[in-house]
Image 1 (cartoon, rainbow, N blue to C red):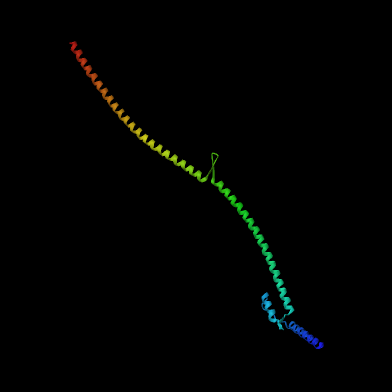
Image 2 (image 1 turned 60 degrees about the vertical axis):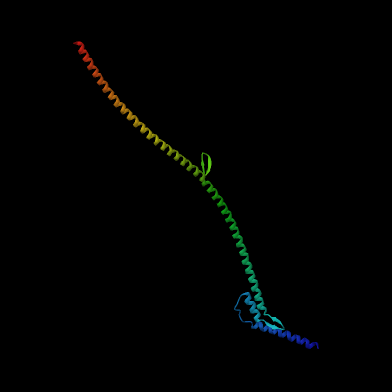
Length: 203
């Protein structure tokens, strides 16, 4: 009873071995999709069912496992390179931020120096200085205009007084000439009267 059972198990093992060996020998077809998913599906399509289990070709399984390892290594390498690149970029960004901050500080300092004016040892903002200067200019211009206006008024008054003086002087000169003529006329008349009187006495 034991011998037929052992023989049956032996034949079944030989059948499985021969089937697996036949699959290995006949496994000459090529996979068109080299991706992991394609290799996995190709391996499943080429596997055989035996009592609910799948008989998978070890070479295909090894090939899939090698592809998985290669892909993982490649992905890990790319991840490491990406991390290194991100780290390098972060360092560059930090350096650029520091440089920009320094330049902004320098620019602010330069702007402050440009906008600052010193006058008589006092620091003024450019806008404040311009306001003060223009205020002084406007006040001086107003004072100058007032002085010019007043001087014009005084000049007109002086011209008027000069004309009056000239008129009075002319009038006085005319009066003086007339008075002299009158005096000379009176002197002549007086002399004539004296002459007449002297003549009257001499007779």
